[in-house]
Image (cartoon, one colour):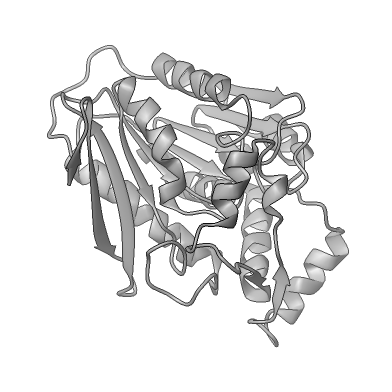
Length: 291
């Protein structure tokens, strides 16, 4: 554990449902937090990319947990490979369960980026009674690929699951050259290419959401950059339009790239997120043990 002037941070491992060790980072204010934010990363990412985000959340009085999904970051598992969307959802469920076990009286908010947004939305669809809100950033529900190609991926994944098919470009993530250079030099994502089965799992998650959007009723904040080349803003717009939630907000950031929280203008995006969370935190919260 390391201590800063305003917060503490902690690294630990959870045991996944199938025995894999899943790495989790957490950050907490020195006092009792107002609520808990659980972060689910997407492709070409891991929990360590959210240090700046976590520090801003802690400054505002919230505790944060960020998990490395199986096969990514410092978690165990075959690198970048997942058999089914359920495996990622199960990993995320472990992190949410950890938050609830340690902070039984506090509201829990879930934020998912890109592919992590799909995982988070599927989790929310199945367990929305456990969450006080879902924040979906650069939702990977619609991507720049023909639907017929995605359907073909689902078929081929049964035969040649480990064939590499998707390599994202770091320059599409941010307009900030410092952020792009950090991605390029990160050993935990070096050489990352998504296998066919992993892409197919994400497509299957999208299929579940396509049917389930109207059943999602928890508070929603949906964010997307209009210049995102990795995922399509139209997917976030469809989520917003079809979600059953009465309390839902869509924010499109003009000219922003794929990773809104590493892009130029991230301060405004983070301010919008914290402002929205603040509107959904109960005035009275019970005491709990932080960290």
